[in-house]
Length: 426
Image (cartoon, rainbow, N blue to C red; front, side, top):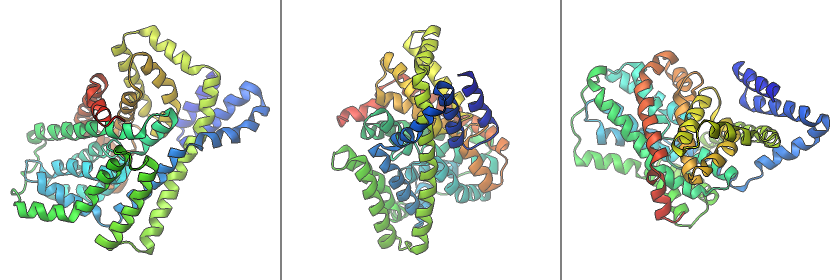
């Protein structure tokens, strides 16, 4: 076990792709466990890790997001957000957060949001007088709303591997996602003087707000359409994902009239690449997870945690700290696949509902997307804007603390997550 751990963290430190790290570490563990004969079972285990029907929803949600992202929808959402809150002190920073909420229902991806707003909001904020590092930090803080508010690929993965209601996870994530937005907007307001944020534009008229709303209503209805069809039982998450693709195609072709052969080709290629990366991680993680289960590592981790304390509050805190630390150095998908089968039974033993546990885990991993040294959103924004990662990270800490506070609220107050699933009996 020691050798597998050394290889795993050593390969990560050298920057090897996560899928390769998981696969090689798992294969070494299997070889030490039973020699070369065990390798005969590897293809079957990799296929079994992917042979989960709800996984079909993932590439479909990704494709719908890609299509919507290439039809001019980003600009319309930015205009709507700016008309709603752009007149506040630090108005563009507030608009960035509101737009992140609106955009979350389209992409479900933090890196997609970071890339899109890195090309739109950041230049606009710099032109208005914000520092580039601060503009990037606000964008990074808002980007994690994307994989929190449904549709969320990470929720699909969690629900699939733990056999938890994906509809319940989608409903449970809505309030935490909105709380993250509110917390970040509070930070913007509190730090407006310290950061020297520019004054907002004049308050818009109802006519201007109505015009901005009319231009973006089609995009706003997409998450309502997805969540509504799932919650009401009209469609399963997989069927809703397929319908969202059809909706995106219809909206792009009829309303925005920007769907053409090039847009379709680029969207399909991007979807294939992203899906391939995710599915490779899932397949190779199933090898490592199989080895961990055989060696009873989940039971060892549980024993170690309960040896520190059996108090539910302390156990939950320890697991949150573990997730935040591991997320700082490891890809989210890999962390989810490796640690969820280990941690969820522990949370179940302290009385946490699997849906509630899923939201706590998802939020913890999403926060790690903007923490160094491997926060994906930081590097996306650095590459898009040319700003240094260290400069962005320095401006991010108030937002990280605010989002950790929301995470703790969600973890210790179940009603925040469970009220909507219970309301709709999910």
